[in-house]
Length: 282
Image 1 (tube, rainbow, N blue to C red):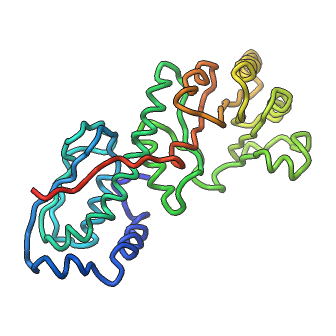
Image 2 (cartoon, rainbow, N blue to C red; image 1 turned 90 degrees about the vertical axis):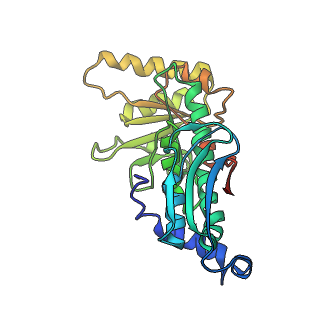
Image 3 (tube, rainbow, N blue to C red; image 1 turned 180 degrees about the vertical axis):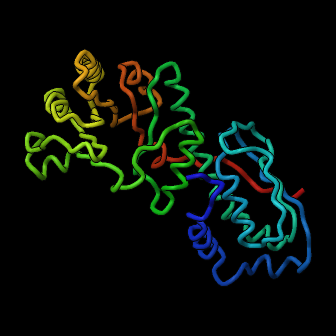
């Protein structure tokens, strides 16, 4: 998703505003005169990687197309505490009514980007990519995956129709990895394994990716060695190796050192501390 093109999320913004405003912003309408103009700024209260500036702008514009919104930073930039992120000017009623929804998006997405950047920085000495999962807030996947990219991470599949991905429950349902047949190369494919026996069986099926789920460091190193040995045979397609399961900031660097190509981190999107950002009238 290119966040400059918001056509895919306009409905989401409209739903969020309807949820927040209800029948009307009775506090603002009751206290602030029609025609009152103000200037306000969005300010980071803590260091963070900013994401969602254009989404915040779209929220304000959805409420009042005459509001003037001026970004002061770009998505993906690291900012300091007290740094101004954007300025908005116009109807006081419109700004006050749009404030919370705009901040909700901006704080959430900046939190995802900031968390992603922490993981990316931990493995920067390696070629390993940090990738996301489908463990996203329902309805917010496009935005959350955009935020992962702005934090320096990479996206795995967006939806179930993008690739064949055989996980543990699929294998249980069909009776084990031995029941799988070589995949047609028409589709990108991935197989989840939990030990070296399953890994060797998966190698024979020649998928594009093999997921090493909750495997120990020695097992992952052995899997990498086995995969790398295939490079001597030009006729064998070498699968990428993805480490998954129990990934934290404390262990991600050690996992990257094993030589895996990717590390998938569900916590990028399912365990989010929103960035502390506020709107202040100036």
